[in-house]
Image 1 (cartoon, rainbow, N blue to C red):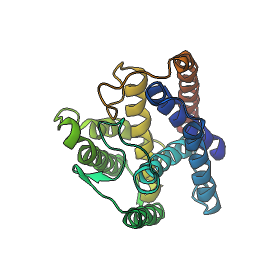
Image 2 (cartoon, rainbow, N blue to C red):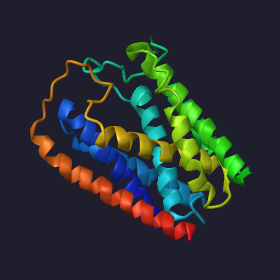
Image 3 (cartoon, rainbow, N blue to C red):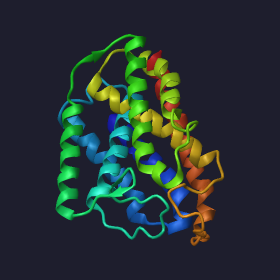
Length: 253
């Protein structure tokens, strides 16, 4: 069941990524299936290490989603080469508006971040009780908010209302994960990361009409045929969210 949950996590992120981006950069099968491949690889690594043992399917879903999103955020700036001309916010390695170049330097940075994530996911400290969950949730939200501001604010300006959004989202969601019982902090951190990505990216993708902020404002829609597939991707997302909700109800019962 945990591997099925991982596959659902990968398909959900693939669906929202294509829904948002493909009209402006053309649909790419490689990009679409990348999230599923990353998610299944992460789930297999977790399963072989025993860290999926005892997790509910809904917890595995959020854990894999959080790790997959972080893996993609390491892969894109550190290991991928891409023309940046279509972006308002560069997707290569830039920090506070300063571009970081040099392939060896980027590979080293990527390797160091992978090692840090691999170490963090093994931390065994149990998080019990709502207060501890709330603290972890707010800390993860603050990390996401700071990372987003460091990457985006130099190019689109700092938005004082947008900055705490991830903190509030996870603070409000924390009672739901707390109700599922104690979990090691190394897993819980990434579960909350997955919850934040599902809620925030889901809202931005399916409930707003603005194009993704990373693209140049003058970038036109170039893949008009893909627009016909958007309702299919939306239906897929609804089906996955409904399934995850059912898994949560079963886990909390």
